[in-house]
Image (cartoon, rainbow, N blue to C red; front, side):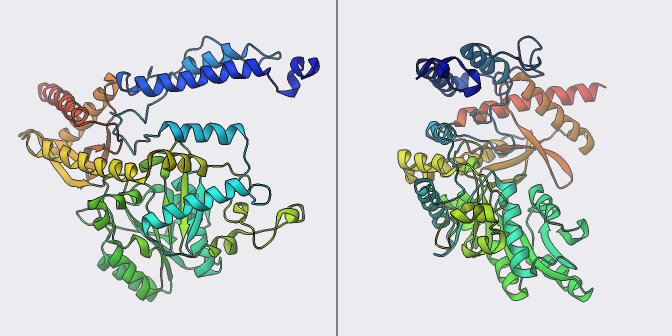
Length: 482
């Protein structure tokens, strides 16, 4: 290496010995995070980062010492995050990744892999096709189905709906209607709006008491819309809602879609891997009949963010929907190539598949099956704990690793118990011990646990419920005294 290379910062090259030292330190930081996570607060240093240091300062004209910058990032930036991989992070859908996935992200970023075209990138393209086919087989789609990795479920849902719009409507939106339940993930509505559908073209049907879309309600709405001159064309069903973990009756809805000529898109971003469990295989029957579906391996397949996936029943539909080949891309275009840039809205895209490939090769699919089964079982164990305590009311049975419940005390109004619920959650999160979220069931605010982290123990669940109960009791007593 020339002296100029060593000293000219505009080349963005560090000496090899410095790169090694920085890399070793970064790996040490990661290992310290992974091995010590259970003993740390779920949310680190709540509040805004400190003003001291370089974070809020104007960008320096001359560079600073790289090791000092790395240490600042480790404390002043990464010291202010919610640890979604913590064994007592029960909120939303936890993101319990694994070390091999993190290394995959590191290697893909370090090698700066462009996973958009196959020529010259045969290794990454082959690995993505392999990993996608693993997911295809997992959910039961037939040979010939395929897809690609996306940034997450939101982009996967948008992509699936874009294929539906192209295949069923020829990209003409007038009078078309998309159906879903009022429990569907917000990304479905956001994706539909992004694709040009007006709010009145997105028909949300009230779910039943079990938070599921019923075929009868959907059939009635379709009949009404046809009579009014509208064009029913797609259903977005849920294979595990974020709110309660419940799944729409996919088999029955697939029958209805077949009769009515509707495209069936399934949002399986969270719940899809539940098919690896005994309970989920039964609950998600019909998932394999989807025309398109979304998955998020960075949720229940334990991958580092970001790692989503869209699958469609015929792989060729993706290129039919998205392929545009301008002059400046013709050198890398030929029909036999798998050019993922032609399969979605992303032209430049990273090598997300490496994370999942490394993880499966290292741990084996049996480990993933066992981990998913454990998450389902743990929520059912939590349900048993709650039903055994007269101070709790289970709102819906545990489903796909999610349980919803509510504190109860005779003499308190439902409105007061709503306030108790929120206060108890806030106090628990502020304590740093666990992170629990709320949702709405039957018009009431309820507590919610999502137990899919494979490192979560039964003791973690029991202690979290005990502390929640203490906070709820204190909140109820305070409101009663007022």
